[in-house]
Length: 201
Image (cartoon, rainbow, N blue to C red; front, side):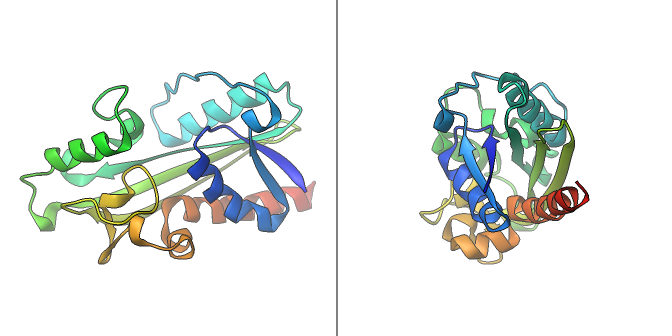
């Protein structure tokens, strides 16, 4: 099984990536799993795709090209907030906040927004740098709306308030979420591109 180093320390994100990558013969591990500290990478891109590349390339360079590396950048974009938090989703409200703090801030910022104007979408960009230096990218989105209160026990980040139909992301099973999520959609496209790359190679 080919080993990809995932440029994240988020175990829940690693689990989501593994669920989709494992069936095509890819073992997803973090840098910590192989005894490497990737340190902090300045995500100074202006899009999710740029930030995903920055993280994947930084990990590739730090590992001296010995492993294929893959990173994703994702976030929630709220129509009523002009697309915010967007690429700043993980830093919404400032540094040092918990997921719960950021959800509370989002709900506060949306307090006076009527139901018909609470549309939002999750966006995900994935970038892999292969051991020969080739770059493979894919993007996916999931449309939904912002709820009024956190509901559900699963997922992470803004999942408890991102509603798809009458359920939040946190209420979906792993299978249900993978079928519709931004990361699931991006990974399916990434899987197609990766398989074609491997066949061509």
